[in-house]
Length: 457
Ligand code: S3P
Image (cartoon, rainbow, N blue to C red):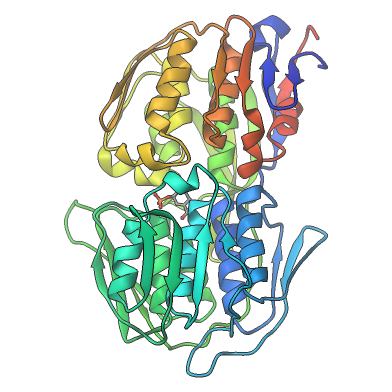
């Protein structure tokens, strides 16, 4: 299999499966969940008790979170695929650990989750901190956390609502009832974190329920969190945290596999004739598996086995096999449950019979790249029939993709989506700036090689 992939200093050249007679087969354990790893580090760092996190995701985004907390004086160590946070002092009047003012600006790298959730933590710390990020993060909107956190009593400043941020925190904060216009787990988590340092109850409402890992983890650590779904079909959800209550206990957990990372291989198996793949130890939290619902509507043959609960999160193993697909319509309310899977869904739609319409996905324009633009440029270059809409995409299939030279736009999810598209193309594809996969899935290429059974190389 030595020639199917040629990895240059930054770019990856991929030969399609049809040239190597390959298919996707075997078993895979995806990397640990990125969102849960971030939160496990955040909440362990804030608990004054000792915590142990097994199988954390050691990818660039989560390492940014880890380093920021080290800079805030938290004794975190990383050894043998385990993060240990030593016990520390509790701040008086608070349920949280005493943090110290960092000596330098906190570098959030490429990670929106780190910057937004840290803003929530620092809002309740009585010192001044700066938060900085890389070029992509410096373009991302932060007013969505700045406005509510300032209402709670923090003073957060930024130029034009983008990073860098200067956070002048205060303690205790005022409680808040906040209506989020757009569902966002990062914003919700930031406000819940600030709510832990506020007097009384802080409530965050969102129009569609976003991923609820923060609620599950914080509750298992002793925080007083309640959830209420709106009546009717709208699907809105309110989460309330009681501040300064319920001592935050230490955390002992193993992080399950990341559904968003697994989605690339689910798609590869669905599109490649003869494929059958088992993905083990996968987080199947229903606020994350919207992609599964959509591909099942498209005709995907999938089966969950060994479903179980681990550390308050649903986990299972997933079988997926090659399936002829038909197009589907994605409703606005389905987007939050598969927000990071829209680019790979677009790839899948190029191979599905009929049209696929994706709507209500305007948030994709303010992710690590403008993902609607990036995926439609890349797939168009490969000959796909795809049209960009203001808040979505239209894709018509099935369509024979041809190999091309495409850019990742420095966005890990675009790089991986295009790697899967390349497996189906007629000729060789080159993905420039492939190395950004280190943000969420450093072993992506090794895992791809491990599940491809090629006959001719
Ligand atoms: C994340 C939430 C999502 C997602 C991001 C990770 C999180 O963003 O796109 O990759 O860990 O909270 P939203 O804030 O839009 O929900």
